Every structure is written in structure tokens, then in C-alpha cells.
Image (cartoon, rainbow, N blue to C red):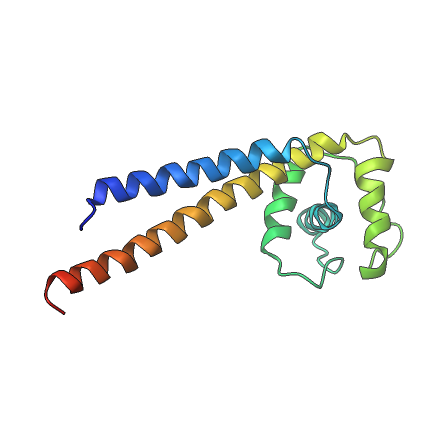
Length: 145
């Protein structure tokens, strides 16, 4: 059985779109996770101050993405008059999200949209890869292999 390219790409696109939309809708009904506020805070500090030493236990991709998205909300940031290191990241995040008059929901809206877009991209890439592998197996099988 072969599946047309158009049908396969349609299924992949619908699945990716559904994943992105559902991720975005569900993010609006949940509170911030414990590491979400750290990644947003560390990313925002890195993007605006050039200091990336607050979050060292996770890869930087999400910090960059979250930081750029959070900067669009133009939040009031904690003062840099002290050293904010790894052990102080919770205090920095708490001050940024809840202590300086920033609207935490508005501050997290951009980063959560980025997360939903990345979820959709992941589903699209995984679906395309699965289709490519499955398609090559069927073509090989049809050739009598």
C-alpha cells in the first residue's frame, strides 16, 4: 500500500497544527512550572544583560528563545546591583515575575507561544522523518527487496 505524498504531508501538517494549537491552549490554563520561570528569567537576563550564568544545568536553546520572547513584554527587571548567580536564580525569578509589578501572565505569554511553536515543529519534523523512513521501506518492498 502506498500513500500519496499529498496525503502524507496533509496528515503531518494537521498533526503538527493540532499539537501547536493544543499546546498553546493548554498553556493558558496552567500556572508556571518551577523551571519555566527560571528559563524565562535566565533567558531574559542573558538577552538584555549579556549574562548567561544563572542557568547552567540546562541547554541554552530554550533560554535564548524564552528570553527573546519575554523581552517583547518589556518587563521591569531586578536591579543588577548585586551578583545574581546560580544559587540566586529563584530569588531573581520570583522578583521578576511577582515582585516588581510585572504581570506574570503577560510575561509568560510570549515564551509559551514559543514553546507551542517548537512543539508543532517537533511533530512536523518527526512526522516527515517517519514518512521518509516508511516511504523508503515501502518503495524497497515494492521493488521486490
